[in-house]
Amino acid sequence: MSDLNASLPWLDALKWDQQGMIPAIAQDASSGRVVMFAFMNRQALQETVDSGTAVYWSRSRQRLWRKGEESGHAQRLRSIRTDCDGDVLLLSIEQEGGIACHTGRESCFFHQLQGNLWVAVDPVLKDPKDIYGT
Image 1 (cartoon, rainbow, N blue to C red):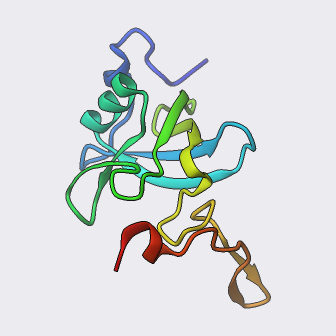
Image 2: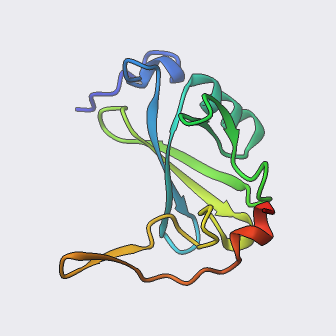
């Protein structure tokens, strides 16, 4: 039996945290690689569904963050799933430009634990200065 209350309107069926946020994992639809993690509020999720492009809540800027608004690396939505508890979202996306990370890498998950050190194991595909300017 699912813990998700499917009889509620879709936004209300989700479990939002005390700040009105829900974690969202972005996964490349072609490769299956997790490229990003962020938070969404209700407005971000509704706009994502309406526009077909990923919109997140930027906790550092305290505003909606339309992925790619500065970099041009938008995420086109293929599908959205939630887990059995309705407290995490999984977005299947097409990553424009092949770069999801502000460091110019394919994925934000590019550090790998090697021994007792975190080592950057993925290449920079594009210098961030060329993406965002100086």
